[in-house]
Image (cartoon, rainbow, N blue to C red; front, side, top):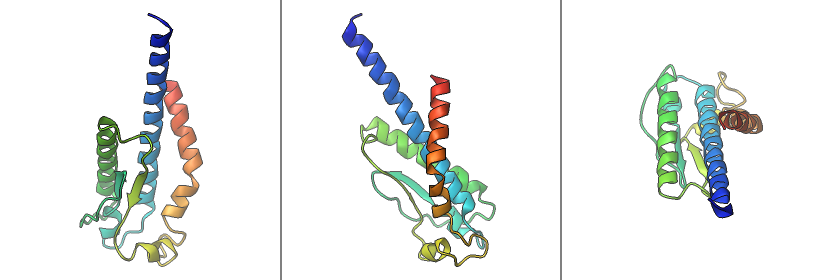
Length: 142
């Protein structure tokens, strides 16, 4: 084994670590957005989508508790990230957390008494802490 092999192993290790940090961070942010979303009929909370590279479309679902929406969001985000990694599209692409229901902006900007400060702004404000936690977890895993 030579110097080039050492460099290749080093690069692969940190590329994999970076992917873990991004996966974990996007999953945590989407979870927070979903769980901060107010629930009346459950339709809004269940229609959050995560995609890599371009926004996803609305899914017409209802979930009063949010647990199904949280799991759907996490599963979908993981699948989208894995697809992007496999296809070489992960690095340099944006992750989108979207909800295409027309009343989303009203809910985000104070229409709901259940979430008067919105759900996206509150969750995004925690982004540095989310990433810091994901980095710490990735370092601990090696």
